[in-house]
Amino acid sequence: MNCVHERHRIKGPSLGLVLKQMNAEIKILAILILARILFGVAEVMIFRVSCTIAGVPRPGVGRSIGVILLSMFTLSITSTLLGGAVWWVHQAANFPLWEAGLVAFFIGLPVSMLVNGIIHAKMTEMRLSDGMAVWFVEKLIVAILIGLTLGLLALIFFGRG
Image (tube, rainbow, N blue to C red):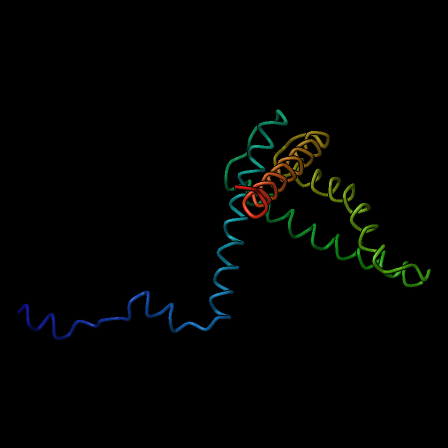
């Protein structure tokens, strides 16, 4: 009976063999998808910590995921529209196009704060000012993390030792 079972067992390729046979493009795509998932988890965690630091009730994980997804979706739409409008104005006025990116970034910050503040306020049942405070704390945490990461990389690559 054991022999029959072994004879009909299907053996698949090992994980190492599968990884060796994958194209470089598929490997890069898999790494990018995994990185996006990890950054999404980090965004949800940062949002929940931001709520705690801002002094508002921390929503559940499911609602936090919904807030982050909706914020990403609306931010992509508003950034696209705002960036297109700024680019069009710069084209019409014959200003250098490199300035359009800076202008769109700095105009986009208060727009992002307002849009995300409204989303935070409506989805988590807080005041608009609390939603904006959560947005500000989120950006502050992200800026600190980026600064720490760049500082660590500078120490690793350019440090003496």
